[in-house]
Image 1 (cartoon, rainbow, N blue to C red):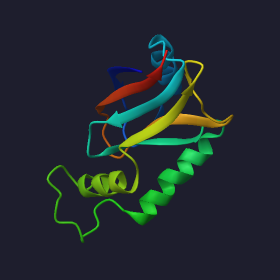
Image 2 (cartoon, helix red, strand yellow):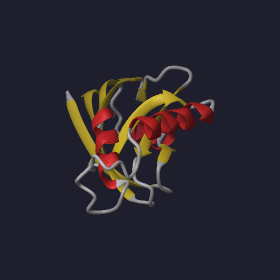
Image 3 (spheres, rainbow, N blue to C red):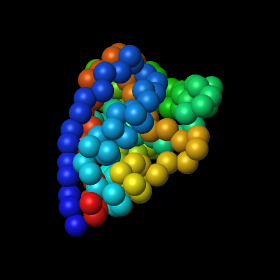
Image 4 (spheres, helix red, strand yellow):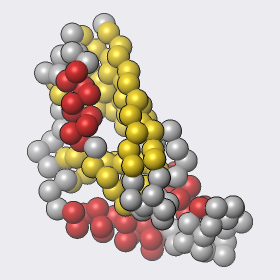
Amino acid sequence: MSCVSTSFFVSTRGRGTTEITRRVQSAVADMNIERGLCTLFVHHTSASLLINENADPDVRRDLDAFLARLVPDGDPLFVHVDEGPDDMPAHIRTALGQTSIGIPVVDRRCDLGTWQGIFLWEHRLAPHERKITLTVVGQG
């Protein structure tokens, strides 16, 4: 059994999704683990990880629209606004999402479905640099 880990940074353009599938698949292939489990972890409280459809960008646009309705920026309910009106909504969106995801590894690749992609989901309006740690545990 082997365990290999690496970290990388993703630059976002502000609120929305950034596909990281190719980057993750490349890192997993380089780890030379044939079968196992890939875990991704985002080191931030205002961004999350998502596995969803990567063919039609309207899916991700609709997810953003739904969260905007569910957790609007500038809601007077929120007390924590240290970094602006999108601060607390970003934390809530992260709490509703995932900061860590696990994906099976088969033949040195994440075993995703046909239309699945891996995304970093930025919840702040401004661009950010986000750190992701990727760990694969398995057999070589």
